[in-house]
Image 1: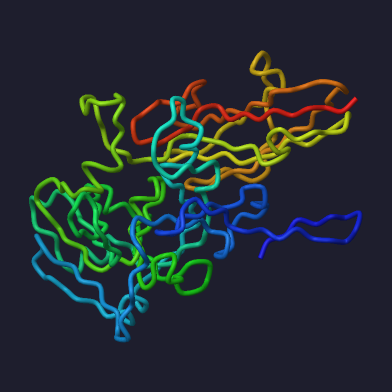
Image 2: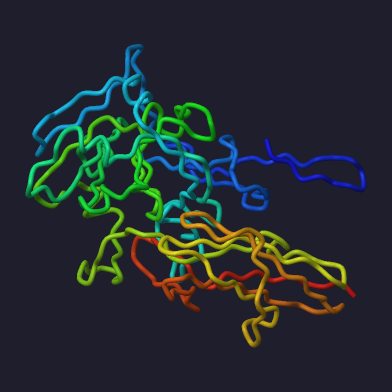
Length: 358
């Protein structure tokens, strides 16, 4: 469990997940406690569309079917004994920061905490597909999770697909371990797809079946949800949600915090889906001037980077603090988020307000 120390009294503040909905369970990570590279399992955000699946008391299997030469069924012990790799990667819900959209949109009102980072161990998906020998002409790989429920009047499982090219990426894995322990039931046990660089909906939990197809998949979580709809009532100009957009958060100070005059450390995190973070800039005068922040750890693909900058705040003053991140692909955070009807991909320049005492 993560704590914040109160050095003056020797007391500690304990971190807890922040509830956004209870049925199904959706809880965000308390971002002000993310001081380490790896988010503990107990503080990893939880995003669900349906109730948690009920696990039978029997061995667990993963099935690969469809447009392959050798359909196969793998036992849990077979998967865990295959060649594996461990990837440190952040997962961010595509609805992260939905609460900040203007005008407001419906859906779980995530603030900044639908974001966590972990160590994921598993077998490369490309290795599993090589065992089945994918047929020529295959276009997409469909992943079916064991979670299910009623959506739009029909009982459905959570299903998503990846283009074949993305599915064969060396960093896409079928994970069975999270932070050196078997996946927890709340984070996908026994198997979870991990797709680094893409929003979390792609990393299908409770993975049960992998199905290779030679056409485009059109399930409700592919063509209805997780689509950018830029108009309030029309579906034209829509396009799918895929890679994480360059983004950042301010961890300290807190929004609307009252500070004593003098020097304060402004800290936070920045991340992106493609490439790496190259720089982070801070403004303490509502965007009039900007200064470069210090990056604390080497920038690595699929991982956040910690940043900080010191600033002397003058007494009896209100300050709007802003942060914007830049990545190696030339992307940066916009001054205004790309509004879309379902509230995905909010990456507007982050900001807080602080007040300085007399």
